[in-house]
Image (cartoon, rainbow, N blue to C red; front, side):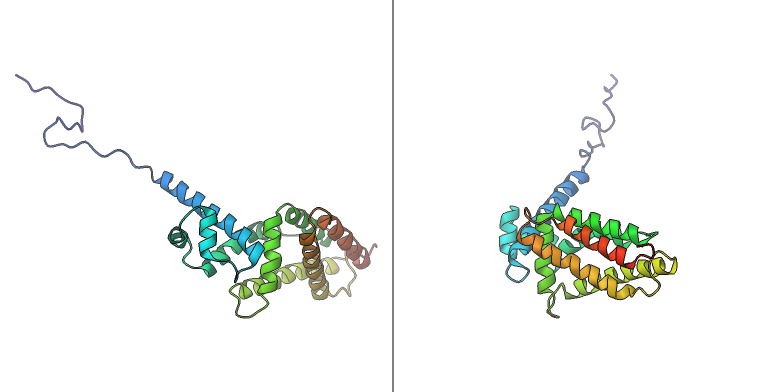
Length: 223
């Protein structure tokens, strides 16, 4: 009597075993990504409230709803967590400004105003930058090199645009590009600090827009 055939891979077929169910690694990756995102969001809030030194991994982990060991699985130290927070926060500015090819000084200033508008929509992150930038003045701070490089890069990009604008006849040929770039960066930071004290009552983007319009009028060949 012929033996009844079974579907391929069935346990009823001699010498063959049912293969394990297909794995879905993306599911575990998605959980890990969501957990990392939650940790980073919680760290932004803590660094904005207490700065780097007064924040603790234990409190961050608790507020993120995980154990401290779980947090350390994703970020081996508080310094590593801080740098990941800053890199993620900086991504928008880098994509929107630092890597952009500006055709004029007016276009550059317009982009800076849009970034100021964006800052006004991310209260926690902007407050965090205010706090950490002040802390990072100490050479031993783990974010010192990050902020020093960030400001140097920002000034370099702005000064380059201003030099090209002066060469093209948009701005006065005697424009001190580096000095203007430092001034613009300083005013934007100062306005961010004032806005951080009163987000509802202080128009960050409006004040900065008025400032860069005055700068552009003062430097422009056409006035």
